Image (cartoon, rainbow over all chains, first blue to last red):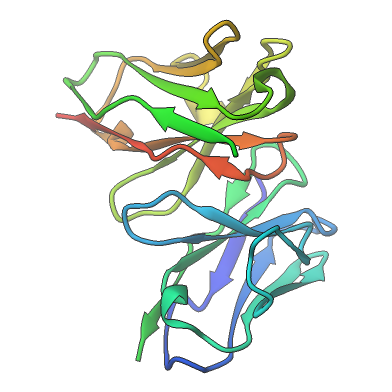
Amino acid sequence: AIQLTQSPPSLSAFVGDRVTITCRASQAISNALAWYQQTPGKPPKVLISDASTLESGVPSRFSGGGSGTYFTLSISSLQPEDFATYYCQQFYSFPRTFGQGTRVEVK
Amino acid sequence: QAHLVQSGPEVRKPGASVKVSCKTSGYSFATYIITWVRQAPGQGLEWMGYVNPYSGNANYVESLQGRVTMTTDTSTKTAYLDLRNLTSGDTAVYYCARGLSTEWFDFWGQGTLVTVS
């Protein structure tokens, strides 16, 4: 199975900060990657598919990039509602796998 | 707008089975794949497998083979997850999720907590 390693595991930031989360795949996965946001007690919400395609209704402050084995999720100006845990997920091969998550906390 | 509504929390003893339902509405049920994902308390997300409502075909993660069955009922637009021979390691919130393919998932159920104790 393809392993996804996210970094950092957690980070603290201020409202208005730019934040970047990375996701590294154990083998090349082209652009077969999605990003999700999860708040406590809620299901995940898809933000980005195909590594960089912003899903409908997702604010433009979110952006995704990368291909192959290295991917990024950036938030250009952190808003109060963005404090959450973020997961990457690969769909290059079965079984689908998720990163371990990155928790974004208020500083 | 698609909606996926899951059945309520369950408590089971080790060795027992559980069946979780996921009732859908607001979209063409047979057009979208249903994927099941679970999340142990305080942990990350684990892909369990998927079922295709149109064909009935299913694909499961190897670690659950032999203990899991995913089915659908097109007449009620409901998907089911059946997990057998439960252990404490199966304690988790179980989510159903919709996808146009098996790739990524755009609408999710609210989750069902299954406690094995």
